Length: 399
Picture 1 (cartoon, one colour):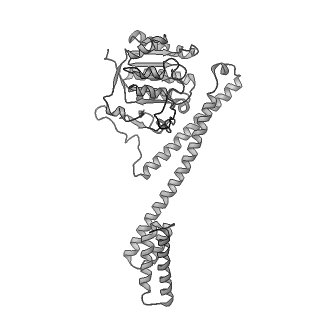
Picture 2 (picture 1 turned 180 degrees about the horizontal axis):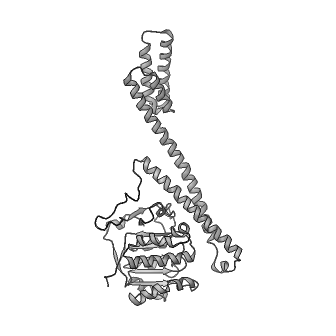
């Protein structure tokens, strides 16, 4: 019954037991046995189950009742520990969320400077800026570690054995790791969940279950690649840093550049892979409407700041350039969750291209290795995420 019935039952049993004990009536042990059963059977619904179970064990007269009372006490102790664990996890989660918000706001503040403004900074200002960046990288690593502890505690609480590198699933023939997919709500899409997995474990994201119910594009030709690098003309280091690999692509695999914005749509329609290296997601040159009109959308590597950032649209689907490519049935999209430094992004881009086109790894696997090239592995490396199913480069395929 309700709490009032519970209290009345315990009160009546306790009063009868005390009255019988005071008068030393012959039925005194039976009253004690009744009170012990009341405490044992109702212990888990009382405000303090542990105390009630201890009273039941103390009042029990027979070994059977004593053993049942001890079992109830053990259950009550497990419940108490679980409740304390949940409370502690919620408190840790609140702390982690506060740290996450502080980190995101700090990243947005540090990223709110143009290249012209940064060029005019003094050496002291630049040192201070980098000191803040290094501090934010450490803060984000701390946040990821906290989230990992919370996830493992949640798995244990649900009766699931937490994963370990030795227990990760592998292909029976190739012995390679089976890739993982995460399906996240828009409110959770801004967090780098990829950092919770083992370093070499490939993880990609999904916006919905739709790609799982169609025949996916698992391989692409490295001879059908178009790229747009430094269309704004101010990322000179990026163009110079990537030029050796792009020159090799033009020579060996017949890659072509999309210098003319007017020809970009036709280039995309004829490509298996589209590489963009510049500011943002490239929406200034290729709008979401144009992407949505593509009959066959290629794999998109959007190597620019906040190119994978999604905006919550309430009851509607999330908005963002990466979402536009996914809805246009792009096999996979790589982008950045927030703003990153250009030199780290250049290193990550080159490592991603090299690993994907030269080693036979999937795009998600190549990204796991490319993240390690960043000097700020959390703040810049974990900003890079992959949407879609595993896609491989087929060196023998030429269409």
